[in-house]
Image 1 (cartoon, rainbow, N blue to C red):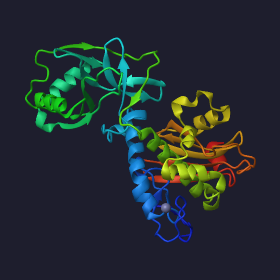
Image 2 (cartoon, rainbow, N blue to C red):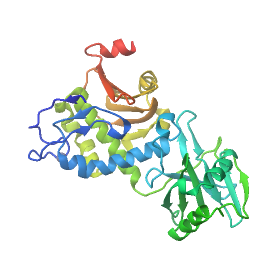
Image 3 (cartoon, rainbow, N blue to C red):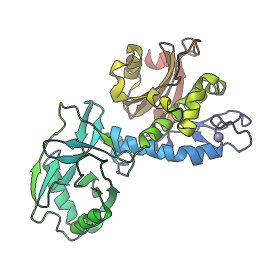
Image 4 (spheres, helix red, strand yellow):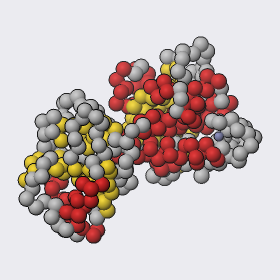
Length: 363
Ligand SMILES: [Zn+2]
């Protein structure tokens, strides 16, 4: 593992504490297969007490939602409470668990069977799902079943029981009460799940339609944003300098990562799907730095705003503007820093246009 060799005597990048021992803080979450760490910049308390739960939320969000269809994510995919999202389909009256398809830029349904009434169910996105489920449920002791209890908020239609297939023999039962979940899991184990049920397939309920997505498990959108901002600051520290990462212009962003306030910083994280109105240079940088087999982080100044772009699994993930207010001084003077993470090998390469390595890689 390579580490940045920063001075252990620095105060903690986030809480400012100078006494507590520093621990290795992964710049980009370790669960994504990365190896770049800050060695002497983040105290053990910030690392494990504050940031670990945020990292877990972010990893769940990526595996379960934004990148859940990616082949390199599939082996890790499982649907826990965090990052699980649903959208209401008017025509079937069903709450459908969804993910974002980063390539098509659309909301698409996960493989699932929704029990819309006592004797009718819908399956999406293809009929094949029913055959897979039927076959696997014949050997119910081989199944790994998780449960997620969720009730849509006030004024929203009631959510039906849904059986979501996340991989071979892996399921999530989504229900609005433990009682409902118990009943369905019993039916699965006794082989009665499909008894007296007629099944209809809806192929692509959200095709070419705007739909509201409800992120199940409240408040976690902010936690995901905090984890993303923290990684961006970490990257400034590792790639540019520990001094720059501690610059007062980034104090709001550091504070947001640490405590969640000021809340307006959450708006500075733009997930890739919302990138359409981003400056041209940001979109161009994203395109040239996204490549299969790698995560990429880029730190550059765009229209006077220091920003970090994050691509995961060779696909756009987020853009983080690191300063809430407008800036009156140039921080980078045209410098660009990038890191390519080979997540299968667990290695990385730090590049910059200062030493020409960025140009050799991408020129
Ligand atoms: Zn700290």
